[in-house]
Image 1 (spheres, rainbow, N blue to C red):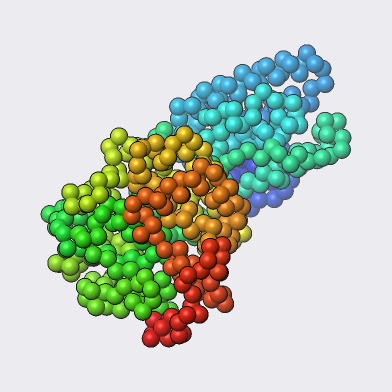
Image 2 (cartoon, rainbow, N blue to C red; image 1 turned 180 degrees about the vertical axis):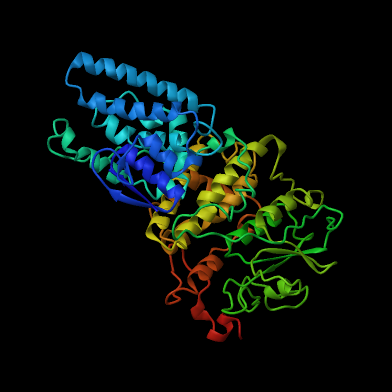
Length: 526
């Protein structure tokens, strides 16, 4: 095991600590002065090559450029002659503009994967607002004024190796309390600002072919690195497609099993409803309370829930067991003719309802219109990663860091969407809701009544985002949306099996309450 000694508050030490997280099998110790590897003081790039040779480019230009930016900012802060200061300032600004121009057309500095030069640029960038600008008078740009560098930093901040070793509060505090800068900050005050927004959506992955094994708007790469305690949603295993020779689109042939409380099922029910497919695709509203051993169940004794008219099963799991599958998730689209599960991925069901069943729909609404597909795809990915699944990453986190990370990304995405809706009724600027709107809706619909408290997403309510709140009202007024949405089922589903099982009576009045049923009926045994 290598032993790396660094000053963690210094940008070079910060970059090396991130690199060590990528490399693994590295002991990190706090030291003073130049970084040391196994006791030897070496050039940072030489240390990086020793720790993780695959993460260091043969072309050192951009690593050197990043080091020059860091050293240049320090030199500006240390200068006590006005003419010398202005000369160094001008040279530093020129170097920074050169880096910005280089990053504008590429995702990373020297290749398709982040390398040490990127980590050095990141360590420089996250100090731009709170250290270089606020303390050292290197104040030509804030990070938001440099869109390529800002996006580059956001892109890197997606990686757990990076965000787990980046504490913006500690970075700003360390600099402002550094004895070297006492003359610049004699009272040792730490500014409350200077923490750049690294959590908002960005689109730098579009600069290269990311080569993802999965659609990031639908599910997560199971092999990707994870933050400690981060929730990972499972992948759906049944991915047949209606509209193929095996599964032709025919009225009355298919049946949807979905509860109102599950947001993934909710969007499938929404698609069926807004397209007017009630007479084409049958549906069973699954009970919101799962059986402790058998999982999702039917319970028509509860208002809003219905029975299974296909095979008469009580448990959804019976359909999976008939196929030898260990899965148990909802929704599922079932083919009554072949007695097979077609698909259990809600995003794909939504697409099928619009496409394969389009000619059978009674409502003329295109959810995936060709003119808006690029924008829909872009929004879908960020909504899934940060909001739909992001809510679960906060609510089901197993560490404080993972929770706070999901929390920050969730609300950054809501702010982004609120801005996106300026001057438009629907997310992509279309004349009617699209798939992007339907995929966002289940989470926003639940936010105030469920996620705000249940998942501890309590920074703001929907009304705090005026354009998003108006969009929610428009969605609820759109034909078929309210009919496929049941907040009582959602509240009972999320709260009814947790803690003391008390279901909150607010913020909207609770219309369906466990107090109105016997325990046997409520459990599904009545």
